[in-house]
Image 1 (tube, rainbow, N blue to C red):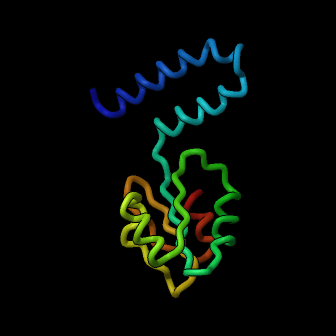
Image 2 (image 1 turned 90 degrees about the vertical axis):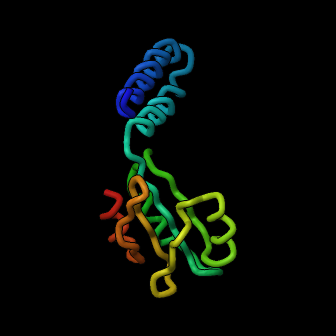
Length: 127
C-alpha cells in the first residue's frame, strides 16, 4: 500500500467510527475531523525562535490570525534552551536568529522557506 492509500483507508475508518459519536458526543466530532485533516494533509512546521530574554509576541500574534489546524508549532529561546530542546525536537536544529531578532521558520516536510522577522511576511508564508 502506498502512503497515500493507507492514509485514505485510515481516514475512512476514522470517519466511519464517527457515525456513532455524532449522537453521543457531537462536540468531539470537530476535534476528530481536525485529526483526520492533520493525517491527510501536509502539516506546516513553524518555529518561533527568540533572543534570550526576548519576546516573540508580534510573530506569534501574526500566526494566530490564520486558522491552521494542520501545524506543528515550536516556540523557543535561542541558546541553551534551544540546544537542550533540539535533542528531542529536530525542528530546532540549525535554526538561528536573523539580526538577533525574533525569527520565524515555516517548513513543510522538512523543507523550509527563508526565515523571517517580519510578522506580515510570516502571514504570507503560512497562507
